Image (cartoon, rainbow, N blue to C red; front, side, top):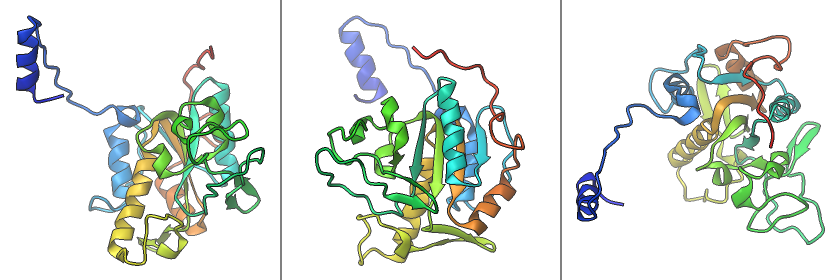
Length: 250
């Protein structure tokens, strides 16, 4: 680690050639600058308001009507040999202590659909991997990841659940601190800080998918806004939005 000059000097001492490679573009989210711009504009992290999504051939973006549809879409991608994970805003209590032999509690409840958060800590529970392996172990698919588990990782397909902590009302986003279960938030945390942290949480979650992202909001008005911004790429159903050849699972 060091500056370019320091690395060149260290290489010269060992008689090695040093070649500097300039990275002119980013490679997150399929290298789609358009998608990253869409995310930050959607969340109000850049001025100008939300943009209508225009497919750029680099990344897929879809909106699900239900969490069950979101999960089924991701499961279909897994059947093709791709990796996929679900994540959500921190709007449901996370049961961090599970007795040996007990299953993971179904903490994330949305109507008649319920799934557990990812495992808390460094031990496997009921076949689910520890938190550090949630994004890479195939057994991590059955759990919903939170921002603290998902950040720093990328996977082929990402499903993101927007909870009631961030909702669209008429022409703007409203953050609701009372809907968040994030233990980082204290009574002393200002509304402005919470607003910023919630928006940035969803920025992290929405930028994990390398091939595509499917989004669902628990709030009907927010869901309608997302559907307005993201024209369906294939209807009815979401099964045909991505036409890449299936990977061979080894």
